[in-house]
Length: 209
Length: 209
Image (cartoon, rainbow over the protein chains, first blue to last red):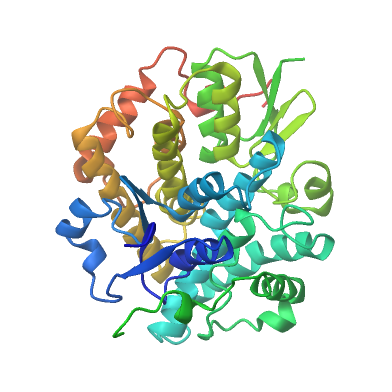
């Protein structure tokens, strides 16, 4: 059995945040498939056995079973010594962006992608609302990434991996990312060029699936 | 000048998360008024001088200027030795709930309250969507708080203060909190009974306002 086991599915950008970290650290890890769209993660059994919050990803490492991608990323930074903070102030800056990410950056984007790009609801008042929230949050990151190579400075950290989790999926969102957010696009390409990086469908593929 | 200065406005539950912490720790602090509804926090000047993310709260402490309520709460737990983690595993549990809070718990609730209760949009597809997300997230916390006095166990932590930030406002949301989420209601009352607690309009009041 691999050292790390990640309960995930390839469509989940939140799971991919962690899969990227494991790949970029060269960790010994394997994905454990969570059936997407079956509602499995919302069942009482899965909540009891894997995660009461009813969400993927969940990381198993020895006796540890961790959920919330931000917690897992921070844990892995501690375990591997990679992509973490230089000092306390840098640590606060990393958490600031991880919180912003969870609150506004990938959270709205993932819902917009799910409704507009996967469920294919068409344009609705909800997709319009979500797209407005996405553009507001992305404008903050765009401004930052015009100044810096990575979100907290010249080196990538877990904050970048958290924020980049949904950038490598192609479903329609009604946003032309390359035209509207060019600095974000260049940043996502820089992350994808780091040694060890693999796209979601490769990193989170499982035998027989 | 007080030791801590909190840029806030009394209607902001995110600011109240920090105001509660400062009060419960008996800190020497003062609120600095951010005009609500004027769009001030979105202006280039405010972004440049106070917070590029365009959000309140912001905490000033000596040379430190911190944003994101979760980062500020964690910083204050370190400064005061109160409401923080017993050990690394407890720390991860606290962060797990703070991330859940930012992603799903108070985030959707605050938007629902803003649209339905403050802007008074009436019922729209967006308020219906938000209310569904609120109920899903609150059900996770309700189940947890049926088992525990506080969200990570028998003692309150910064995770409770983060999650409770919006419970002490009365605008309509279309959710009967006492009927639908009784364990959450009892938990919010336990927090409000802690020594030093003051309601938002008192804690974040300013002279002449």
